[in-house]
Amino acid sequence: MGRTYTDPKLDLFSGGVNTACGAASTAVGPFYCPGDHKIYLDLDFFQELQNRFHASGDFARAYVIAHEVGHHVQQQLGIFAKVQQLQRQGAQMDGADGLSVRQELQADCFAGVWANRSQQRLQWLQPGDVESALNAASQIGDDTLQREARGTVVPDSFTHGTSAQRVKWFKTGMVSGDIRSCNTFAGEP
Image (cartoon, rainbow, N blue to C red):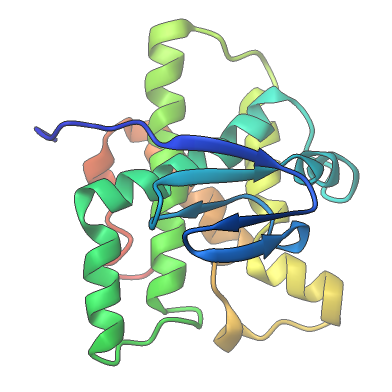
């Protein structure tokens, strides 16, 4: 998009980690901290991804990493700053239509763009890889996680979007290969 891209830093951890965004434990899972431009990957999460969520394979793990890199891209494009400004002005963050959900879905879309571009360049995907990533996306949707933990779904508490939304936006990015197709802030998420 005509800007200079700076790679994020990667910090692998297990158990807990201190970041510019505060302390985090394994319960948080992988995350991006805009304060230090680092992606924090809890190595135990990938085992949980396989065992608990039945999403195994290299491409499922790559999707998770690409999602976090998507947040780094948002930081570089000024999207994080815009969301923070809207939050200070009283915009709704959580809930099915909140800015947190829209920001997370955009990171899913950016992960799809990466998958498209990576495949065009490397031709590395094998049969079942995309399905593995889509399964990972669907297993970590707010609705699926809440249903599993509580037995019920509370859309007002969503922070990442439903399983269907996560799959939809990853597919949108993967099919288009164009970051401009990822405007999750307009219309229905």
